[in-house]
Length: 319
Ligand code: 173
Image 1 (cartoon, helix red, strand yellow):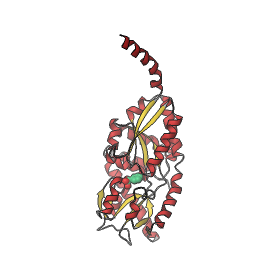
Image 2: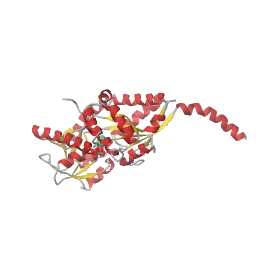
Image 3: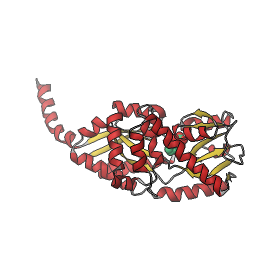
């Protein structure tokens, strides 16, 4: 009796605070020592400082907590509330996830031209996810190699991929091997692969530069890393909590120019560590980039005949 009375009082006092503040569990599909996670953790610190009494984020960890290619399922099923991932990591939930790499305009513009709303329609319906926003952009992908090539022909070369690069590297004749980022170093060290795809920045984070001889220029696409939330969790937040979180994501997107300077620094750092650029003549370069986009969109549209073309229209710059 006495216990129950005391419990009742405690519950009454605890209830208002619990209703106002919510804590969401966040995971990253990228390893914890990557630049993406460092920026995520800084952002979470800011969110938690400004979100007292409204919303808090609890960073659970990287692929050791939830493996890279299972993160999408974890968000879809509500095992975690928010995930930071490339769309390439959750094509097992719905194939359109990988199309955002093909966007030719920054996410701020996608919010204005209707692309963002369309993305959320697809993410809601097919992934049970709310697409919160994009935390990495202005980071073209590159092909990194340990064998020299003189033209965009990868026949006889074994290349580490994710879905990002599958259609393009496949079209150039490569033998493909998919791995999570956390397994690239070992694959290079063992000589299991002759190269890999990765954005312009970040190869030093996991020491891949030790095992890399060449970077093929130009880059292609734009590395996409985004925050996605479980839709039920998102819908269950109060309007104030949703607005707060959305504003925090928009604030982070506003700092995405960081990636331009970071990319330029990373190229210098690669040169300084002995990584040589492989370039092609102007005609071959143009054909290389065209093949990248043509094969990329063809891959998306093959798997998604309705949303694919609609996304292509919204994400491609009008000439
Ligand atoms: O693992 C990858 O190469 C990949 O798909 C990716 C996507 C976005 C950013 C960095 C890597």
